[in-house]
Every structure is written in structure tokens, then in C-alpha cells.
Length: 298
Image (cartoon, rainbow, N blue to C red):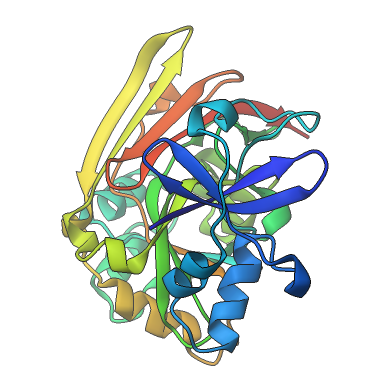
């Protein structure tokens, strides 16, 4: 089952179910269930499967083509699939990432390789809903950074009981030159407006039996020319998703609807450092293509 959100100028953000090219609204006005987060919290509270709740509340609606357009608050458009209360991220879950970061850092050589082989993963707070964007929306370029990079990842949506509710495509946008200067600058490298893109839909866990079989592809386009492309598979991750979730919940209260980013195995070249108006396309065939445009944020 593929879930999404539509922004409607009259009703605000509304949950929907995607079947083929058709979008079916999902809501329960009497209980004020309108967004995907509303549905996720409702299903968790009643100990129901998310897909069961959606099946009961599905109505008729528009085609995907009608709403898969650039955000415009005067028109209905495809929006971020869920407004997560929290977004957390994992780093150095791929060997390629560890090697690149150790070669790239100006201080503390070997710390990333150490984390790659350690029992404890790198885990950090990434964003709140206000710092996240959805399909066809912008991704942020910090005004004090010169090398902003994409980090294409699989996003996992969890409830407060550690259950995996579904998956999305994610872009953990990062100012690599800031982290490169000193690892203690990681929060500034990672957390800013437009630092996390999620979409284009949320695919429920029952539809993706083996997430490690998924392939992630990324293209960066400038003036309609492909500037960079890369590909990886989730099967190359060193750590299991369940193990990452276990560490996330250690001594930590995690609200339902939280998103966990699982790390990247695609390393962008510095020659392809993001510039304003670059178009980033990240594709996981079983989920869809997440498209965003780079914009400077101050």
C-alpha cells in the first residue's frame, strides 16, 4: 500500500492512497483523521495495522498526474508523505561512506572507520517536520557552506513500539565542507531548513518484504544535463535496520511517526557540489522517484 499527502488550499494537508495513477483520499472527519500522521497515531492507539485503517477510510479522488506538480499553496499538490515529529539519521552504515569520510576529514583520521566496525552505530538527530520537504519542493543550501551534497537513503517510519510502519525515499542533505572542517560541527552540517527531503509516497511495510533487496539511484541535473549519477543497494549496508532501531530506542522516548534515515552508500563528487536550481532525482523503483530543486537558505 502506498500512502501520500495532498495539500488542498481549502482543507490543508490530507492523506491519500495511491493505486496505479489514481489517488484516493483517506480521512475520518468525525475523529479529525486527516493526515498520514493522524492515521499512524490512530492505528497505533487501537493496535491495528495501518493498512486496515486505510482500507476502512478510503474514498475517491484525483489522478497522481493532477497533483504531482510544484508546490503552490493556491492549488492542490503532492506534499511530504508524513510530517514526522522527529527525524533521526544513521551514518557510516556503508563501507564506502566510512572510507570517503576518513579520507575527507581534516582532523581525527580513522574515526569513521572505527564507527563502521564498532557495535554502536553513529546516530544523530536530523530534523523536525518544519525542516523537512516533500516531492517537487526545495532542498536547502546553507549560505555558509561551499560543498553541499546529497545523501540518498532509505527512510524508515516507526511507531512508539519499535514497529516498522513503512518506507520512503530520503535525501539527507548535508554541508560536507562544514563537517570536514571538524566532526564537532556535525549538527551544523546536518540540521538546517530544507535539510531532509522525504517522499514521494510512504509504502507500508507489508508491501516491501525485503528492504535489503532495494536499489537506490541518484541523479543530479544542471541545465538539463546529468552532472552526477550513482547507485547502491540496501544489501551493502553493514547494519540491519532492526539493530539501528534498537539503538534509537535505547534510553530514548520515540513518538509514533518518527523517521529514521539508514545511511548512504552513494558518495557525490565535490565537482558536483550542489548549486542553486540543481535538480536532484532519487529513485527506489518499489517506492518511486523523489524530485527536489536546490535553493539557497540563509
